[in-house]
Image (tube, rainbow, N blue to C red; front, top):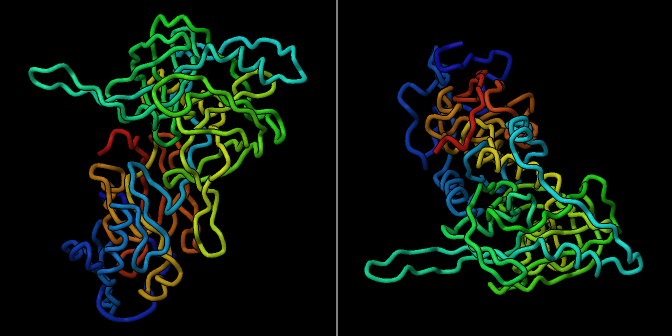
Length: 438
């Protein structure tokens, strides 16, 4: 192994199909000095090989996707930019949050309150709403601007819902409700307005925690989203449209207990319900038939797949909620740490399609579009235009998607195979917390 952590991999493909000069990607400039015929850490030069040059439109298309989320040129699968290793197109979000949970469990407050027995089994929705509405609040995020010589100006940015989850006044909501505000106000059912502190938010799971100390409102009872079944009663409480709190109630059923949908280029497992989730409902509770919260409602648009023509299928006419087990796990870490550790190597990439691989005489895999300065990939010597053909035991040359590294622990070591200039190399990465990198 050399100083950059690369070893030349001799068991893989040394000579790609085709002949000609070593390739270059025009859109990102010439290869680094000494790159042609060398591995990431140098080594013996490879025999000259004629390679087709990647056209400017190919790399420009990748850059366009990274910058604006558009799919153009030859690239069929979009590259999703971000702070941790991401998959092309849809990224499976973490199913486990093992990092920091031990500390969080010890020091975080107990979340959730006692559930009241439901007496009206014929029409339990009314009783459920009465029992929990007092713990649901309206949330408005503002941009507060200080103007010289004038009173501060408060511009409302977003309005949503939240619900109290601890005696200490912690409130669970959607991250997109509070993410952009520098001033957050909470309106309680009695009409009183309170300034809230933002404890932390996680864009990847769209969960945030804010706090109003001394609020004096009981916490909602927390259910078990892993045990719900399709057909069960679902009651949604929220603040529909605008900043005036109204605690609206919609009633339906759990349509699908676990549905994989797409949000902002990420895959998420959600609860699907036919209870209406309207604008302003985001962050409110979805309550099961036992009167316990089973999910966090979100009014964001999701995509559940593609039709025969490749068009995304959106969520029109259905509602979604983040499973409460996931939400509480995230909330505990936010209360303890203010953020969620996200392990990764620090690259942006796009998957090379079978057509492009044949056209440009490269293996299939993950084409490195950008490398985060100071990240594990940068430290190991990865460069733009490298092709990752295998990582963490997943063979990417078959068209498989990048594995989810954010599920792993920060500090864990993984291995990869990297193709550069017709040769393949092995490399080790020590996963870092991408929250700490630019």
